[in-house]
Image (cartoon, rainbow, N blue to C red; front, top):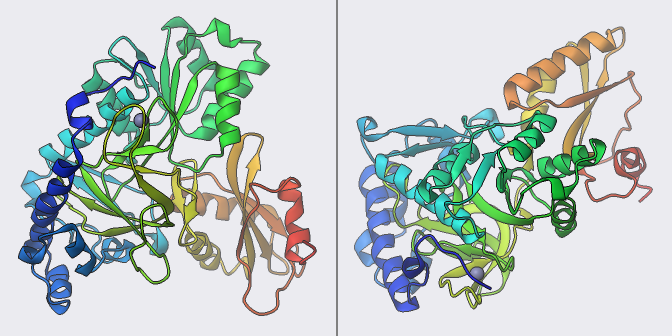
Amino acid sequence: MQYNYLDEKLEKNPWDKLEENFVKKGRWTLKRLNDNIPFLRDRYKEAGISPEDLKTLEDFKKIPYMNKKDFLDSFPNKLLCVPMRDVVRMHATSGTSGHKPTCGFYTQNDLDGWSYLCGRNLAAIGMTNEDVFQNTTSAGLFTGGFGYAQGCTVLGAMLIPFGPGMTSRQLEFFKVFKVTAFHAIPSFGLRLAQVMEEEGIKKEDLFLKFAILGAEGWAESTRKTIQDRLGLKAFDNYGLTEACGPGVSCECQEQNGLHLWSDFFYPEICDPETGEVLPEGATGELVLTSLWKEAIPIFRYRTGDITALRKSDCPCGRTGYIMDRVQGRRDDMHVIKGVNIYPSMIEEEIFNLSQYFTDIYLIIYHTVGVYDNVTVNVEVKPGIDKEKAKEQLQKNLKEAIMLGINVTVFDPGTLPRQEGKAVRYKDIRDRPDGYKGWLKMLKGEN
Ligand code: ZN
């Protein structure tokens, strides 16, 4: 195979150079946090650590982790290591536990590095400046849309910043502008395939070669369907707002694990329960240290994502670490249509309408057609207008979470009561009987 790179030499950096960089840049990152963030300085002090103590890779293990709570507690900008005037961009998630979004701030250098990494992703899947790239995610608050718009520009391919939705029109653009590559969430890739079928568009009518998909979990079977129906190769990529957005890791043309850009991030895997560092190849929680970020660097940040790491032996020749596709989450966060959802966010909106609803509810993550979706089942109090209550909750959820969420309203006393610790959410996206199976499951029938 002819492999494609944004910068072949850098992507094939020898191991000893990478390792030297982990320590040197890791120390630089630790010092930034130690010098600028009082609560982290206290944490390091308590652990008896100062940045100068970081001399070898082994020393990383002595340094306390950062975690999601650090971001939540620091909302909106208490993790900033630069003066506000040096910040040129902010992105954020829609919200997490307790409704606070996770904010990413960028200096010009951060922005340049991030754009470069997204360009590196696009080159890794085989794209060049000859390609025409349609971005089907919005260049808005979330990192995905802007990230790939910038990456495409770094690569020099032509960008069509279409944004989400309007599937038929997207397909028309594919045809008219001879689009060869697109970026989407996986369920939208499936949606494109579905509409092609409905409208009698054959893959031979299009010019597609590559799709880069991410921001929600997807199965190998989904990849196969998208590849077969659209006539292209579909690639996984990984990122998170705390790290920069997309650009942490990406599959290459081999589609065998994600190359984690190890000149920009140092990864470790820890036991999600105990925090103990696990040996190479073991499955656990991904921990990331940024080696370049100025505004909000991360040092040993626990991502909550479950995966495994290995040293690259990929035929493409890239060095550094390869991570498996993400297998799940440590906590109860779900990603639906690129939006992070915690059950507690939904619960809060239900409880805010306690004049309408009882406190019995069940959140179901399921599949509608090709889409991952979430439905909230609630129960009204006696004498409440079900339609009116439903409308209000749907409206509040949409405002709070920035995602359309279906609400199903049940009569008083009809949702099953549960003994002991109540199950408040179920993920039945893999269940053959789908959404209809949820009552059965609640009753403990399987
Ligand atoms: Zn490779």
